[in-house]
Image (cartoon, rainbow, N blue to C red; front, top):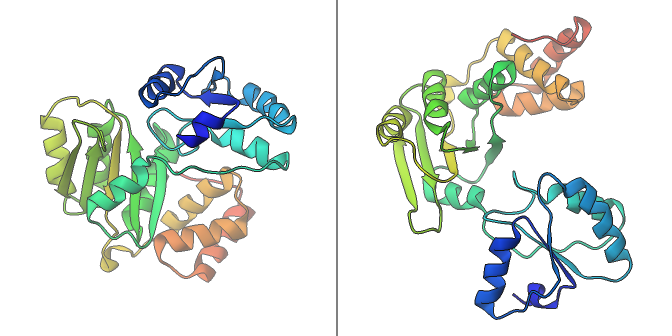
Amino acid sequence: MEALRDADVIAAEDTRVVRRLLTHAGIAAGRRLRAVHARNESAQAQRIVEEVRAGARVVYAGDAGMPGICDPGEVLVRACVEAGLAVEVVPGPSALLAALVLSGLPAARFTFEGFLPRKGTARRERIAAIAVSPVTTVIFESPRRVADTLDELCAALGAERAVAVAREITKVFEEVRRGPIGEVAGAVRAAGEPRGEHVIVVGPAAPETRLVTDEEIEAAVAGAIRGGTTVRDAAAEVAGAFGVPKRRVYDLAIRVRAGGVRGP
């Protein structure tokens, strides 16, 4: 609350939410509140950079998550960093870490996928990588698509893969479902369309399921290269995800580059 009290400008993803918070804490908002959301963040970032350069203390407050983690804030932070300005973080709620802990699944190493692509090759490649990943995977999903995503994961990973699905974390209707993905997917669909953003935590693949074909590796490498990753970095990324030797993946990546980036 001290950061909000001392700020010259309070940039908020949702000014209504932050105004209620300020009122609850007995802090006057005055004219300090400003909306900075996904639609105007790029334009507002440069304005804020100039204000900070002029000596203003600016605080960015998210809505119900951690700014920058699948939420507005990343563009603003990057603009300030590139301008050589000091950036500090006041730890706040993070559905990613909260769900990972609540899942009871291995958390020493994990991959954060954010929201999966809606459809197409990119979605298939990401799910294929999760299927063979030797570490826990965390996914964000909307209430409208969570049941379909769980069904797709079940088909690709097998009905026995361990999973946890959490929603409304730290709120009144917090709910966590844990168990084999086949059972959890069925329970979520049977419950009807739920409310609130969901976090799906998928347990790591068993060692014997991590065998992967050259074609699968090539598809994953092609997807990484299409996203702008270098051949060397793509090889390292895919080797880590699939749990296979980097040399093998690098050789296949060279073949993909020589033949043109491709995929299914």
